[in-house]
Amino acid sequence: MFEFWSRLWGRQGAGCSKDVAKERLRTVLVHDRASVAPQVFEKLKIDLIRAASRYMDVDESRTQVKLHRQDSAVALVANMPVLRLKHYTEQNNKAARRGDGRPGKAQGRPAPRH
Amino acid sequence: MGGEVIVITSGKGGVGKTTAVANLGTGLAMLGRKVVLVDADIGLRNLDIVMGLENRIVYDIVNVVEGRCKLRQALIRDKRFDNLFLLPAAQSRDKDAVTPEQMKALCQELTRDSDYVLIDCPAGIERGFKNAVAGADRAVIVTTPDVSSVRDADRIVGLLEASEIDSPQLLINRVKPSMVRRGDMLDIGDVMDILAIELIGIVPDDEDIVVSTNRGEPAVLDARSRAGQAFRNIARRLDGEEVPFMSLNESGGFWSRLKRLVNIGR
Image (spheres, rainbow over the protein chains, first blue to last red):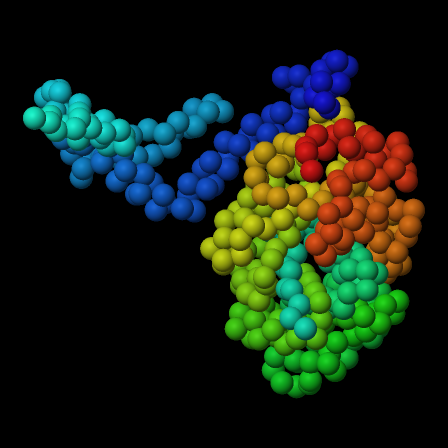
């Protein structure tokens, strides 16, 4: 509601110092929180490797996960050397789908009755 | 009785922690609760002068933990309310004079015979902070709507979690409605967005606070003070009452403006 009136009065816009403050705070807090809890990145790295390993073999020892700041944006950058890509077969696909919690064909279909 | 220990903290100095403790403590006493204010800012004693009790100090918190006096000998009864007490900090000692274990034991002893124990935490995140939060059940984080204070408040949220004090509540102090309207001050929604913790109250910037501190009379005692009204509301919320954020219409113009800038439900 307030923002609506402010816009109506033309008082709030890109040049507002509070918008600058909010953006700067957002960025700096991503880094602050990351620097006081480095173990978060270790856990994230393990999860990312586990997800990628369903499709490819990755070099775990050389995998790096970090934040990259550019201007006012922060990106998560994962550098994960790929050793070998797995063959994409129906079997792999089912396995990946089962990983998502959906039943695979083999499990889902009832045994034929005779 | 089994009272509650609430630490008032901020990370950054000069945001109004001591003023908040004095006003919330007096506000809770006005509601008939038995309250003890503990000044944990050892070496930089100030809660006594803000409360107007600086001439009554005989013993302090360090004397108590070192066993030089009994706890009740060090407690100073407030001039205005006989259910409000102050345990002053030591002025000539440093933060190491009390350990977290001693603080915990002290808080336990104080809650046995009171409804609320409010702890005035020193600025910073070192020893003094750790001592002040050691015995606390709950925390109120004081911030002003500026980048350095909000950043430090975020750090405190993390440290409180590590000390197993979950869900701290946020008190936003010194809000200037005219600057918020111009878009030159973070509004309540912005601060809540960034810190993502529960809001317990908003206190407008008010010259009455300076006057009341000069006199040693907390602003909650002044029925006409806007900041005093805000602190009275927060005291009621601390006590578990549901007080709508800015539905008060006593000083119409101001509150309706504040209502607009709050821009949040509840």
